[in-house]
Structures are given as structure tokens and as C-alpha cells.
Amino acid sequence: MKRLNVCIGLSNPKSPTNVGAVMRAAGCYRVDAVFYTGERYARAAKFNTDTKDAANKIMLSGVECLLKNVPYDAKIVCVDLVEGAIPLPEYQHPENAFYIFGPEDGTIHQDVIDKADAVVYVPTVGCMNLAATVNVVLYDRLAKSATTLANDELIRQSRDTNNKVKVSV
View (tube, rainbow, N blue to C red):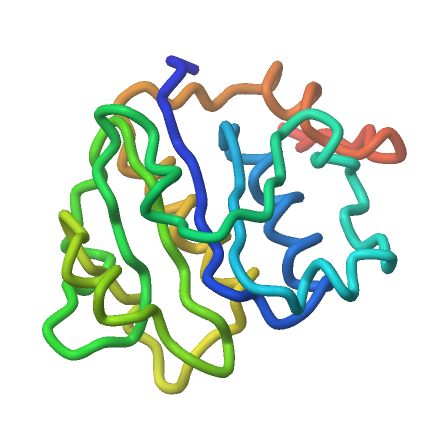
């Protein structure tokens, strides 16, 4: 897989369960770093929900302002249910991206939306939780990438140690 620069920003995430699941997704989809704002996650971080210990490999940092942590040359992509946003199936992901996700019980602040290079949403009936949304967006990025490798070696490297099943021909 060609190495791309991908970072995630979480705007005041509501629960440690979601942040743990976001970190697992970050590990699966080779995210470089995850930033979060707000105090709710830090207060509840004692509950370990990152079952693959992705936080040991991927930087997870509490910051005051997501916009001050956008990597050089990265496009800001806000992901939220806001009017005027682009449906995810129609969106072409930039090579270098800083994806910003809103909290489950709120939205991304207007000043952040105004700085975005793109605002996208997942066209569902109702809203998904934060971790599910991160997974869908990162999978969409992978599925649309021309550099994706998909083969049995990737399966062997990625699957759980208890999984040795093969498709019979």
C-alpha cells in the first residue's frame, strides 16, 4: 500500500468507547495521528476500549484547537450532517487529508466548517455513531484508492490469530 498522509480530528468526542473504536479504525486504515478536543474523553480515558492497542503506534493527542494541528499540505475534510455537504459516494478523497468529525450529540463548529476544503456526509437515514462514521469514511477512502493492495498476504497479516479459514475451490 502506498503511504498517504491521513489524520483525524475529533471534536469533543462523547465517550471513551467511541475513541477506542476510532483508534482501532485508525490502525486498520493506517492513519498517522488522531487529535481530539474537549474534556469528556480525557475524564473517561481510564476505560480502555482500544482493543488492538493502536494508541501505542498512532499518536492520540488532546488539543485545544483542531485547526491549529492540521498537517502541512493536508486538506481539511469535515464529516458531519450539515446542509450543503457532499454525499460521501460522490466525494473524491485528497491524497493528504485531515478529517474532522463532530460529536454524536452536537456538530462541528461553524468556524471549522468555514475553513474546510470540503464537507461530506454519509447518506443514511438517521445519524451513525462517531466510530461507525470514521470506519465508513476511511473504508470509502481505501475503496476509492488506486494504490490499494488486496490479496491473501494482506488477509494473513490482518486477520485475528484464531482465524485460519480458507475458501475451498
